[in-house]
Structures are given as C-alpha cells and as structure tokens.
Image 1 (cartoon, each protein chain N blue to C red):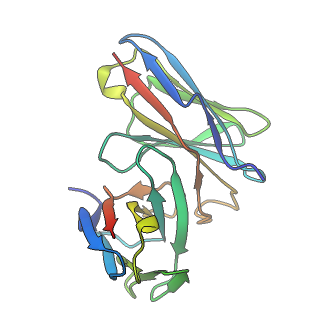
Image 2: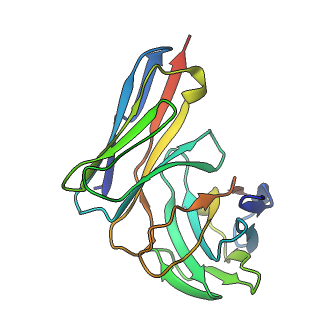
Length: 111
Length: 116
C-alpha cells in the first residue's frame, strides 16, 4: 500500500466552489510539502508544514498539518479555472530530505 | 533568478541504449535530487547528490547512476534502457543545512523519456 494516501483521486468542481484535498500518512511526518503540477510539467512548490497544528495560507489556498503530524489537508476557497491541475503532497518521513509522494489529486474547475 | 533547468525536454531512445539527462540547480542551491514519475503516479525518489557524492538512494537498480559537478549541476545516467523506464524524469534542488533540514525542494520541468 502507498505510504502516503491522497483523497480524492480526482475532483471536478464549479468555479467559485470551495474544495478540500487530504493527505494521510501511516508514519509521523517530519515535513509535509504541497506541490501543484500542470500535466507533463514540473512541480510548483506551494507550501511547507513542519509543526503539528501548523496552518499556512497563500492567496486562496490554505494548508494544515494535524497535531499528530500524520495528516494534512489543502483547502481552496472560491476555486478558479487557474487552480486546475494535479495537487501532490510530498513528505519527509525519516528526517532525511528524501521525499515520498502521494499519487496526486487531479482538480478540474469548470465555469 | 533562474530556477531549476533540465535538458533535454524530450528524448526518444530504444531498448538497450544509454541516456544522460542534465540538471542545473536553482541559484544558491547545493543539493540535487532526481525523481522518476510514471504516467498517473507521484514522483519516485531515485537518488540525491550533495558535495559531489550520492547521499541517499531510492529503490532503483544500479543501471541508474549519477554525478554532481563542482558547480552543483548534476547528471542522471541510465544504462540498458527498458520499456518501463519511459517516464518524466524530474530534478529538484535545495539548500542543505544538515540532514533533515527540511528545506523545500524546487523542481525543474523535467525530461520526458520515451523508450521504443
């Protein structure tokens, strides 16, 4: 099974709607990273979370890491077509700088 | 300020051939990691280079090898190519402040490798 599980695998929302993507680990996370990827392109760094209970925001995107540091959520408020893409969570599980990634969540936003 | 750059962007090879992919890290970064991303999957860690040495390695055979140069740029070499090596190869760079420094890795746009 995957060390890092993302849900849902895909999401189709209407423009203006809010949405949440989850990332769950079976191990304690030393660092949790959220990236966005356009099809066939590189990963764009969004946010990094390290402390349990930590929450960060950038524009309309908010990410949280739970107290036990085993689950993170990414929330988008008032989604726009520009938010479409694949969202990937990556985690450092051994305090080693080696990232393990989930399989990604494909987001589509329609007008 | 240039980000991570990779070359070439696309490459087509046949089974059994060898390939070299190149990566220049973001300015100020000294650590380079390589990932393989198959279609529909998340990136899989191949290895990481720091101070011109391989520091960590993922679950990849020794057909996959690499190198880091004094200017921090890096190469990924794959020998005896298999059909299953077809993927997007991503390079990521970061600034190392010690093991587990948890600095974000910045990615290039990748090299799309197709094996015929």
